[in-house]
Amino acid sequence: MMILWKFTTGARRHAAPWLLVLSLYLANRRGLASAPELRQPPGRIAIVGAGIGGAATAAFLRKEFGPQVQIDVFEGGKVGGRLDTAHFGGKDFETGGSVIHPLNLHMKQFIDDLGLAQRRTVPSRIGIFNGKELVFQESDWFIINFIKILWRYGLNFLRMQMWVEAILDKFMRIYQYQQYGYSFSSVERLFHSMARDEFLNMFNETLDQAMQKVGFSQQFMNEIVTPIMRVNYGQSIKMNAFVGAVSLAGTDSGLWAVEGGNKLVCSGLLYHSKAALIPANVTAIALKTRPVRAGGTVSLYEVSYSSEAGASHNLYDLVFIAAPLHQGKSNINFLNFNPPVPMWFPGRYHLTVSTLVHGLLNVSYFGVSEPASAFTVSEIVSMEHEELVVTSVSSLDPVTVSSEYKRPPASEANVWKVFSPAPLTQDQLQKIFLSWDSISETRWLAYPYYSPPHRFPPIVLHDRLYYLNGIEWAASAMEMSAIAARNLALLAHHHWYGLTDKIDQEDLNSRIRGEL
Image 1: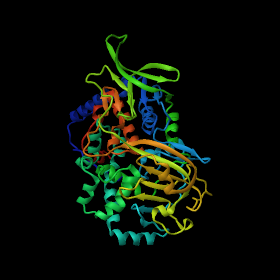
Image 2 (image 1 turned 45 degrees about the horizontal axis):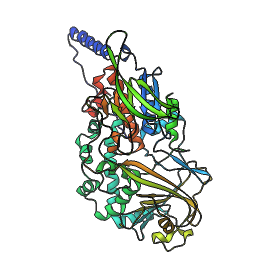
Image 3 (image 1 turned 60 degrees about the vertical axis):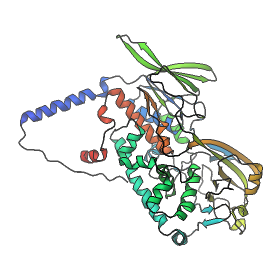
Image 4 (image 1 turned 120 degrees about the vertical axis):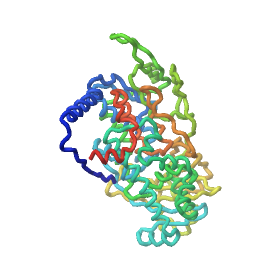
C-alpha cells in the first residue's frame, strides 16, 4: 500500500520582486520548451505482439499520444500470447498465465476500465509431494493448518511473508512514479529507482543464497519454497532472488483471475485502444531515410511482414517489440542499423508442458492410502526428486465459475492440469491417472530460464525502436509486462517531445513526497 507523505516549505517574505519575476520567466521558458503541443504527434506506430505486453502498450500509447495516431498491432498467432485457454469437455480452461496478485494495480485498472469481472474463487487445498508421499496436507480448518505449519516449520512461514512484504512495499513505488509520468531508459534504472541497489543485487544472487543469509531453515526451503518455485516457474531455488520473491508473493491470499479467461484483457485493451490488429508475422524491421517537403530528411522504420495475403511492408515513426527477441522465440531481422540490432539476445526460455487430463486421479501415486472420496487436496506441488516427472498436479476450474459450481471430488472424473518439464509418456500418465477420456497438451516456452547473474537486454534498441520483454529477465508475470508497457509509452512520449526531465531521474521517492 502506498502512503503519501506531505510536507510544506516556507518562503522568505521579503524576497526581492525581481526574483519573483525571474522565477516566473524561467518557469514559463521550461513550460514552453517542454510543451507537447509544439510538436505534432507521431503519425503511425507499430507494435509487434498482441500478448498482455503488446495490448497494454497499445492502450498506454493511446493515452499518451491521443486519438489521432494510427496504432497497428502485428500478431501471427493468437491475441493473448501466453494468456490462453483450451476448450475441453465442453468448457474453457486456462492453460497459460492463470492468477493475478491483489497488488497488481495495472491489471486491476484494466478490468475496471474494460468492464470485466473477477472470477469467483473456489477454495483449494494444497498438498506437498516428495516423490513418495505427501509431507503436508492442508486442512479445511485454519487453526489446524496454523498448528501444522508452526510445528513443522516454526516461524519460517511468517518470516517469509514479512520478507516478501518488505520487498513488495519497495516495488509498489513504481506505480507512484508512473502516475507522475516518470520513465526509465533501462530495466536496471527502473529497478534502481525503487530500491537503489537492493533489487539489482537480488538479480545477481540465487533465492537460496538470499534466504539462507536471513536465516530460513533448509527444511523450509526444501519443502515449502522449492515447490512454490517449481509450480510457478518450473525451476528451483537456484533462480534469481527477485523472481523467487515474486513467486513467493503468489502464496498471498486474494489471488484472482478474470471471469471468462485472462486473455480477455488483451482483446479488450486492443479494442478500446482502437488499434488495428494485423494478423501477420513480422519478418524484418529496417531503418529507412526519407526526404521531407521542408527540406532535409527523416528516419522511419519499415516493418516487413507476412500474412495469408502475402508479404507486405509499412513505414512507422515508432516501433515497439512486445515479443521475446530470443532464439526459438523470434525470427525478426534488423536491417541498416548502426550499431547493429541483434536478432537474438543471450539467454533461453524454459520449457513447461501443460497437460490437461479429464479423468480419474490415482491418489495412491501420491502415497495416499485413504479412498479417493476422502481425498480433499486439489493442488499437489512437488519437492525436487530425481524420479519425479511432474512439477504439479491441480484440479482445474473453468474460466467461467457460476455460483452453483462445486469442484468435483477426486473420486469423480475431473479436469486436472499437470505441469511437467517434458511431454508425458503414456506410461507416465497411466501411473498418475486410473483412466481418462481426453487429453490436451500445450508446450510453453513460458518464461526465461533464471540463472544469475544475467545482463538485461536494452529497452531502447534505436532512437524510436523499443523492446518491452527485457523486463521478463527480472521476473515474468502479467503485471511485469503491464509495468514495462507503461514505462515504454511514457519513455517514447518524453523522447518524442523532448521531456528529458521525466527520464531516469534519481531519488524519486523523496522528490515525489516533496511535491505532495
